[in-house]
Length: 327
Ligand code: TRP
Image 1 (tube, rainbow, N blue to C red):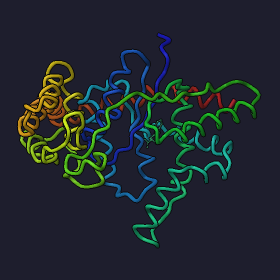
Image 2 (cartoon, rainbow, N blue to C red; image 1 turned 60 degrees about the vertical axis):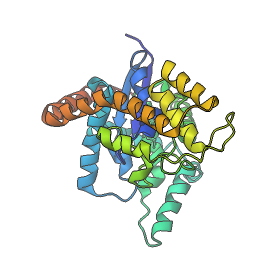
Image 3 (cartoon, rainbow, N blue to C red; image 1 turned 30 degrees about the vertical axis):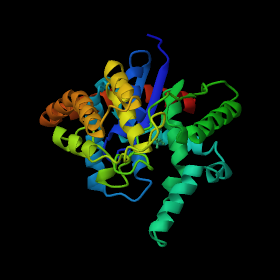
Image 4 (tube, protein in one colour; image 1 turned 90 degrees about the vertical axis):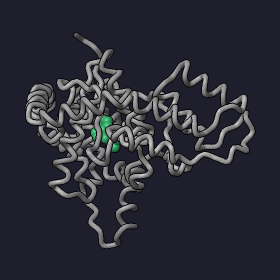
């Protein structure tokens, strides 16, 4: 009881690859021990960019199943659109946020540019503009004190606090607490096919290793990782080799990692062996997660029912906040 509350959201877009797993999900799983956590699949946020309804519905459930397989507890997980109070609170908060503030959001500027670049006549939705207000509602409706997100979300969190402040000032009560950003140190995993860019879904299949991929595919991707011709001084590493060590450290920290590192430094380690060991480490780690994912896939209906129930349970908290806000 009375644990501090954590809230975060993830968009149901793209697959869950190793970079995303270590960048966010692993941390979300760990936080469950210490905090009262709520994690949302933000399907309404995913509608702000061009989307296909059937695909979005599928992606939403797939993300639910992926997160469950990784160890997010079902009672901590909900689908944003199942809790209409988020959008209702977003209306109230939208009236506490200026047009100018939203215009200054760099994510809005970047994404609208991205849309214009793909097609000049493309549709730029109002939802993309008001996106951060819905995000503020996601957070404030649960009076979350900690919000684990990447650095790209700092500006949205800053805005959330200024909206909360304005609300408090307007009503004359310190009603909303100020949510804090929770940054954790996470390994930065690069594309094995091109270690000059981050691992990512949007750049194509070869630029990400899917957490749920078959072991053979994972090994193959790691075997074909870009390295160097071996002429790099032993006290340095090329980006590709460093990335393999980053993976090793993430998946098998400790003894095995240190042995390989020593082998690199004294010049006895062949890249073929390094790749083999990294492949083993990744597959060892992902095996049980992939099996769990399969078990969930085979019992989809039960899991959907559970998530509908947890969403209904979490909704009660949102309803209470909205009642208080209206009062
Ligand atoms: N904007 C976040 C992202 O793109 C997703 C998000 C939506 C979120 N609502 C949230 C994150 C509430 C934290 C809290 O990553």
